[in-house]
Image (cartoon, rainbow, N blue to C red):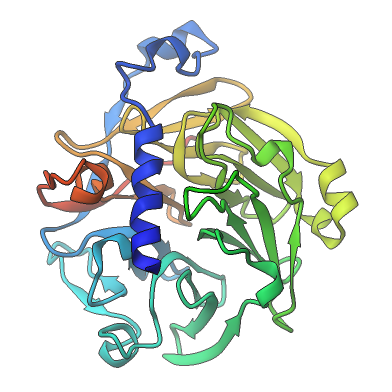
Length: 353
């Protein structure tokens, strides 16, 4: 039943993101005409596979690359570590016992991130818990179940950020997982030390879709200095942000949310230390970027024939990395007809200078 709800929810997410031909009149405007003639490059492929279909990704400070496998695909293995030196190899992570098969401790992972100490945080949306694994010692750090009172029956626990400065995790709970309820999105804030959690800013206007019947809070990011949390609705064209320090209490949080910029409908978001906000533009199948100077524009196109840029990750090597998994081509999202054709990719493109 959980898998059916997930498949149905993702199907609806895709349906709401209309094709670029249908949305020409409402696409975000480029704020400066000179940006139109800037050369746009194609993203570089660093991993390609017919079998491994990455959902989201995380890179450690020393360059190790990990990907989650979207539960929509009913993957046998939930998380992989990738070899990107041209061999295109992937191994179950942390190991076969923990990540592979019905008896593994991982049940359904989309959200995945690494902290500066080499700890890998895995958000298991089906088991409603975090698994924290130390990639240096290769040992389990802790399991952090979410409190029952911070989730709702329609919770959709897909993406999150790690705020190392304030020692907390912040989940973007879009809700709408059953497709029967109105959106009641919220942040779920988890204390990394104690595991205590709370549901905050419930149904705030900044989290709501900007089209009737659309989907709510989904992409979320934090800058490398842990000063601001950036977010928006999947079916929204506005980037919001709020100081990371304001997650201590609900009034302080909601009173300090502000509009920051423009975006497309998107599934993923990342921010660098120059306030460039990168998004996975699912309408135009590209990586786009917004900043206050140049507005919203294309940063890089996907390789020819590809679709659905999904997760994004700003690394410390001067690149923003992304997954491309063709979710829109699966049978569940394409009226029962699976037209997916590998390879499935991890890509990267240089950060703006």
